[in-house]
Structures are given as C-alpha cells and as structure tokens.
Length: 290
Image (cartoon, rainbow, N blue to C red; front, side):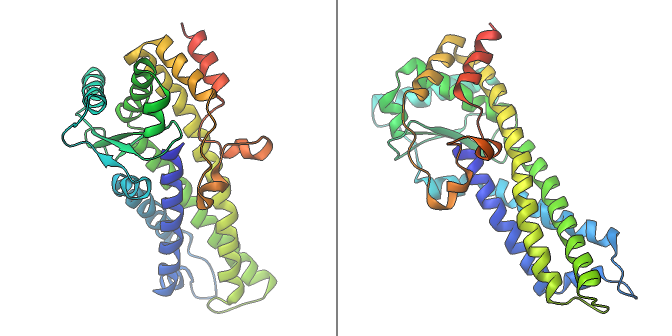
C-alpha cells in the first residue's frame, strides 16, 4: 500500500504544479486558433508532456521520496543478526529472481509493512518496517520479501509509470476541452480565455484525476496477485499464505492525513481506490493455484 500511495501522492502534486506552470508561461494560449477554435493536436502534445513528465519525475524520485517520507535507514553494514539475516535473504531472493541486489532498509513503524521502489529492476530499494520484524517469524518475513522482490522483477514501478502517464495525459486533455466548451458556450468568450476556462478546467482536472486513480488502483490490485504468486514461487506457497494470514491478524497503522483519501478501509466506493485486494481473496488465489 505504501508504494502506491507514495507514487500517487507525489504524481498528483507534480501534475498540478506542471499544469499551473504551463498556464503561467502561456502555453495554454497556444491551444487557441484564429476564430477561437481549439487546436486538438497541440493540446494532445502538451497534455502528454505534462502527463508523462509528472509520472517520470515521480518514478526517478521514488527512492529518495520513500527514504525521506518514511524515514528509511538503509543497511550499509549489518550490525546485528537481524540485519545480517535480512540482507542475506534479500540477496538470495534477488539472485533467484534474476535481478541485481537492491538496497535494503528498515523504517520506524510499529505496523507490519514493507515496500519496494526504484526506477528500474536493477536499482531498487526494499524496505521493511520495525513492526514487520517484530511481529512475523523468519518464514513469513521471507515471503513478504519475496513478494516485494517480485514487484521489482516484474518491473511494476515502470509499468505503473506508463499507465499513470497515459491517464494523466487524458486527464489534462479532456479537462482543457471541458474548460474550453464551458468558456465558449456558457460564458460566450470569443477571444482568448476567460476566468471560466481556468476554473472549469481545474475542477474537471480534479474530478477526472479521481477517476484516473481508480484505473491505476485497479492495476495495482491486479499486480498484487502477481507479486503474491511470485513470493510463493521464491519463498514457498505456505509461507506466503502464512504471511498474509498474519497481516490479517494485525491492525494497520492509521494513514497520514494527506494519504487518508487513498485508504483501503471500509466498503462501497472506498474499494475502488484500494491499492490491494482483500487478504481473503489473495489467500484464496494462492490456494487455488496450488
């Protein structure tokens, strides 16, 4: 969950900043033609630049953002048996998965959790919480590490970046079209853009951005099943099932306020934003694959 929340939060902020910057610099004025028409070709190009730039900045800054926001302490030289076992286990699983050794870190959270991030499969970070180390046995931790290594080996962060870039492009594209239509048809602006364009396009961008998050969250749920299967292949199916069962017995730590909108607790519409499927479904999928 931490992985998708960090990525989406950072990406949304960057998208907003780039969008406002483009307006301040007057790039949006390029989208008008003589007679007040809308240049859709130029609009699509500008939208793609804004959409993919935000996604790739998020991708390349992902390790730095994770370390900074989560307080990750990377293990350079293991100083105790737990750290040595952790580094050795990650090294073995990475070798099995055919990737380079990731950075290994621990972050100070009492809630059992872990994440992997990085701009490519050979330059990744795998981090676990203190709560994970304290509440799970070695077999269960190994399965969790296998799950995270599978995310790295599958190139999930890059794939997520491309999907986010595509949906960002269409968010910007259609929000500008909506703003243009409202400005021209409702407020009868004939030259340039009036305040209605800026206000409407910002509102449309926010609403469409929420819909885009649903698409990204759907992909995230799908890739969790793949990572579970990968963790089972690397560490053992029963270890993976036991780790998920252990997670189901713990109470997750409340999310920070800025991340609360992306929480997975509750039912109804909240499930559309869930980055992970319900644990019961994940366990069932592992059992049925046996």
